Image (cartoon, one colour):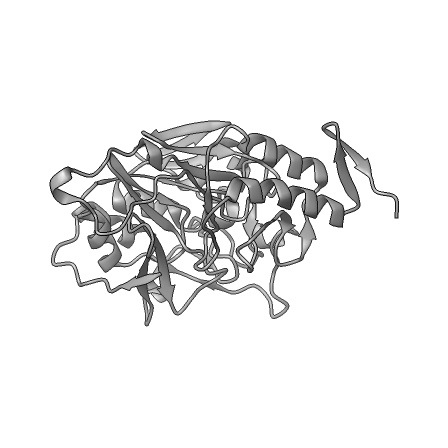
Amino acid sequence: MIPIELEPSPSIPLHALEALQSDALLPICKACGTQYPASFDIQRNCVICEDPRQYVPATGQEWTNMAELGEGRKHVLLQDEEDGRVTMIGCEPGFAINQTPILIETAEGSYIWDCSAFISLPLIGHLSKLKKPLKGIAISHPHFFSTSLTWSRALKVPLYVCEDDKEWYQRLSDSKDDDQVIWWKDEQELGRGVKVVQCGGHFPGSSILYWDRLSEPPPPKDSLPTKPTPVSGIIFTADTLMVQPTQLSFAFIWSVPNMIPLRPHSILSIQDRLKSLSFAQATSSWPNKWIRQDAKQILEQSVITFLAAEGWRIEEGKLVELIT
């Protein structure tokens, strides 16, 4: 990944400043980064962390807010060295589970996949002057809900959230009439060649972002890139399915921190949802978790390997228990 330093922005849209000021003191869980409305009783534990897919730290529940997060913290953009249209939005030092949103810049507009708790004025300035204007933010599952409503308000773009995870969205009670939250199911087109696909498993609404880069127009002949631009389809998986550290296979996890695997039928359901998509690459929502080629074939093999580790094999499309 190629680091890109953000420059101070000379002007920030007024609506962005108002959004940040309005939400600056709302409580944010230090363990998972979820933001709550002002009415939430912080004597309670974070609802997301109490669920067995996450955890309340042994040291106890702790809270912060966006104003405190901005002290001594900055954004670092990490541009993919192979496809400059893909950029990870990291922050230093890291926070919560180090959620790393991803910016993709297509010919018809730009999109953000997933969200983190920290948002800064330099980042807003950068995202407000993209060559291809930002058109939306899509979220994979509740562990990335974070401060996404604030991001949507500050950037003035729609926020796409799968309706089957609506019960986990903690900002419902203080949403405003002019908030652009779009609840969807199954599939949702974001733009030409870009859509979110509900896969379930990790959460009922757990999703992936699919970008069909073959649908992008070719570069003009008088401005050809110095290296080939990838045209293969790519899936951005978050932890709906995880790219393993080897970057040679996928894992299917119900609870990542508590190391609980996904049920076999849920794994097969994810595989089935992705069968119609054409893709050769995949990345999870953290740096250095890429599969650069043959991602779809690797998915097929990963399903077989993971099911076998859980004591199952597939025979004529049905699960059969292995004899050990």
